Length: 80
Image 1 (cartoon, helix red, strand yellow):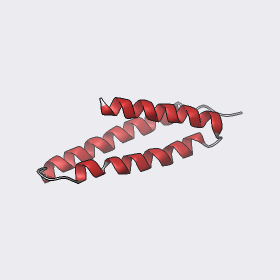
Image 2 (cartoon, one colour):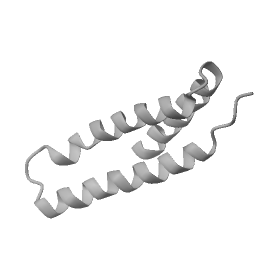
Image 3 (spheres, helix red, strand yellow):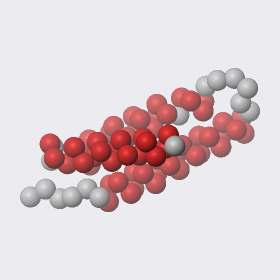
Image 4 (cartoon, one colour):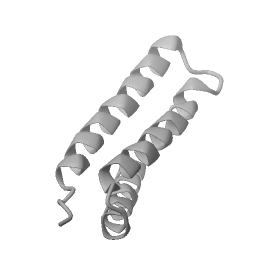
């Protein structure tokens, strides 16, 4: 559920950036990478989580980020 909400927020941000800036893709990538790095704080912190579970959670975050980055980057239109 959280992935869907964050994905829609990212998509909305990309749509807004396309309207207000020429470098929408670059700006969106910067914001998205910062968001991904911040989201890695959750699986890397806390207690009661084994090292194996942490690795799986980090890999799930990175996989989701890779899919969203590549998918949303393809939707960016060209400004004329």
